[in-house]
Image (cartoon, rainbow, N blue to C red; front, side, top):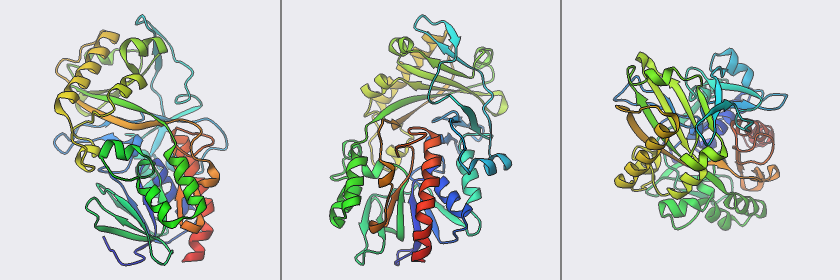
Length: 400
């Protein structure tokens, strides 16, 4: 990537729903400046990502959110073009619950599954791919995947930012910067990856701008719930009993979570008659295994978090045994992987919306950790990105 200043008008760190929505919302409003997204994962999606494999073209597992919901009107403006383009479709799978005795019941009232339900079409990561497709006019948006931003440096003239990579190498310079996630703003990066500082806090201290200092402090204080997800890929034969289940999304009651350590299970059809099963752990289970990452995760491959193979096997076996006991279904012959989401569900109150843009520091924030409607969900990511685009647009135009 180019390193001359300024390389781009706007850089967005993170190509999950919020980052891709911000790009689409700005283009929807006619902004044609240069825009680059930098994503640590292998492609867009974030927590609506889909696990694919170069070795196994038929594998497609939605290992984060299996659906998303919209709970209030008017809906985000970005949804209509996503529907027209066929990037999303109504979620049509049946939902049931499981109680602590193993009995099936009706779906539970849940903030994640109330209102109007949608899914990416055909996979969840197509939600972000559709948003990026919207963002290519009136000017293209560039996406740099598998890219770790390790540090943020304010430019000496105060007119933008320099982004540095894992080895301290310059990645990009930009007039404006947006963080669409909390990794670079939260102390968990120190505990998990051994970083000596929190990048945003270090940059805010260097600048000394009061609003950014307040925003950095608020982001660092956000607590979040983790989730350890077991991914199972079943052959057509091995999936026979699973296919006969009356549900495609199964919620576990509080008693069931306490008994089996599972929050919900989703069934997903794949190519060639295969089926995927995603077992999402309870918060308590994930808390007990916070330091255990999947060996194929971005944390292990890009952030230098050393996987612990024996611990990973124990977590996989514990979740595998639990789901078999809870449902009375066999996972024999399944391919198994672990995906650990360190901050799957942020806890309220989140970042106050009035701190989502710090114009004197030329930095903004969006995502489901921004307080307000949809907090902690895809809806919040969509709405916070549209709100930030409205605020950011005149400043981007003025600085062009």
